[in-house]
Length: 456
Image (cartoon, rainbow, N blue to C red; front, side, top):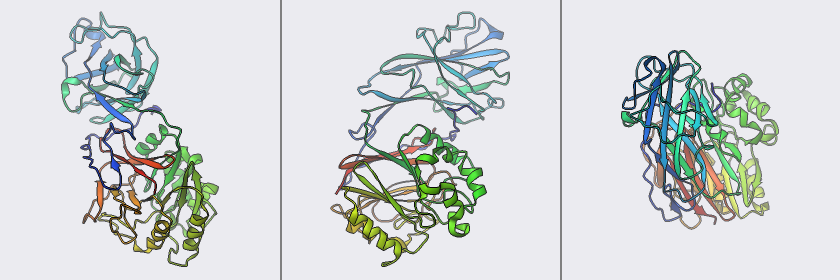
């Protein structure tokens, strides 16, 4: 499989509708505290075929790439309206839903000098040269699925850009063209001013025998910063073998920058020895499961909801002392079991309330959980779940790391955003006195949720 390729779900989810809330500002994609994303459709696309050298396929609903007979495909995009520097550009393409569209090699994607070739005139005999830098390649592609290639090297700002695709495989791939409608190619361009503020990014409920963790690990590949986990790092029993078989090939490549927390499945192995053995010192003192660290102006606390959390317990006393000793103006905490959730599979874990209370007493900003395999965002709340725009903690359930999705039940008060069909990661940009959050979806899905809040 090519290094820039990852599997996308065949059907895109609807983009979330975002609304303003009293305690903070929820931003659209063009908001001042989050990057802006623009999607461009191709202005031209076509393929050429060596076995029909004088035939034009510019109006075909299919784009072919092959090595026997040789087929090459061309795409052209016109990018305009950008006002900020480009931080990323991604080409999204969809394989046709026909027998034979799949291939062990999805093709090699290169920049092209020519941007004036004619969609309705190009043939094998007069084709433009595919003469620019290699942008990426796809490994095996399946029928009726989205794929993505990073083309940031080509798209530096406004302008017209051509991409040519070739294949060395005699078992070629077929993609949908711009004539196909909803599955037409897309160029997704993200812009925004770069920031040196720390980034904390992650999710929970991650690795099993499926492909969800592969999709979310690919997101981490292009997001710098510290990685967090909200437990249930591997399924089903947290064994050393499962960590090595499931977690290591995907999220494991980010282990050196990961600060994890354990979940109940990690504790299906007695004492979570597989978890502590795999993560080592990154998991804090061995066997304890709670620790803290600082990122810029932020104090970050990792807690363990699989051991006692009651008032006066060792963990609760440690937490209060740790918070009292912190000199940072902003605080974020994460653990596995959620105090607030609308998930149908697991209800609220009220035993975690003493931890939330301690954080509330010390004016913490954010808490992140897992356990329910979905995404949910709550307005700032006090420990009993009341809306509190002055001192409340904003909470997230971020259990969309890769394990199979769970549904929602009764929607709880102050739940502001939810999704149960998209894998992704939750990204925090930690500013000196505020933070941005962003749900980053797996490639091929469009659900997102982002916003900003000030520290207390």
